[in-house]
Length: 236
Ligand code: 6PG
Image (cartoon, rainbow, N blue to C red; front, side, top):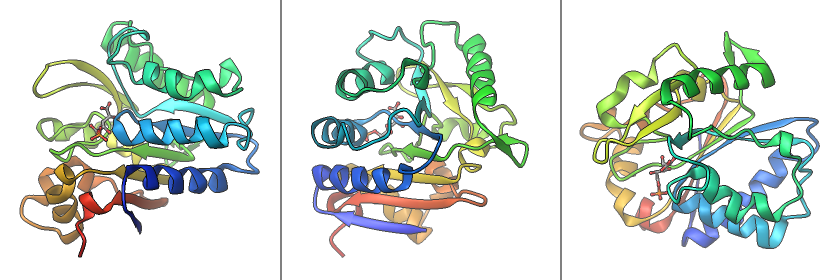
C-alpha cells in the first residue's frame, strides 16, 4: 500500500492528475470508476484546466463508484458535478461515459448498472475488474456509498447495491465492497482535518477501526494507494 501526503487539496489534485495520466497512458481500454466529493472536484478542475488534451480519452471509460438516485441535472448528482467540471470540457466519446441513471428506480438501476459493467469490463475471480477505482472517505469512514450502518454492502454478492444515506435517507447506487476490492488499483483521495481521526484509526488499527467501511477496502490482488493532505494525515 502506497501513501502520498501533500500540503493541501490542490496539491493532492495536481499530483493525482499526473499519477492518473501515467497509469492510464498507453492502454487500449482503461475503465475508471469515479467518486463524488470535494477532492474529486479539485481533481476534475485541474485536469480540465491543465491536462484536457494530455489524456487519450478515446481509450478511457468513465464509471461511477456511487451515485445519488437523482436526475442527472440535480445539484446532488455526482454525474452532474463531473459533467460540469470535466466531461463538458474534454473530448471524450459519449459511449465512454457510463453514468448511473439516477432518475430510474434504485433497485432496477442497481441491476441495470451491474449488467452495463459486466457487458463492458473483463472479469476476474468471478467479478468485473476495474482498472482503477477512485474513492473518497467521509468523516464517518464511509466510502463510495457504503456507510457504517450498512457494512453488509462490503460483502454483498451483487456488483451494485442500493444504499441509504444515514442522515438524509437519500437512496444511492453503489459498487459493493467485493467489486471494489477486485480492482487492479484503488486510489483514495482524502483531504480535510475532519477525516484525521478516521484516517489515523484506519492506518494505526486504532479503536473501532473495523467499524469504518474504508478500512475494509484492500484490493485482493490489486494496488492500494492513498493521496492525502496534511490536514487529513496530521503533520507527524
Ligand atoms: C459521494 C462520494 C462520497 C465521498 C465522501 C467524501 O457520493 O458523496 O462518493 O463517498 O467520497 O463523502 O467526500 P468529501 O471528499 O467531499 O469529504
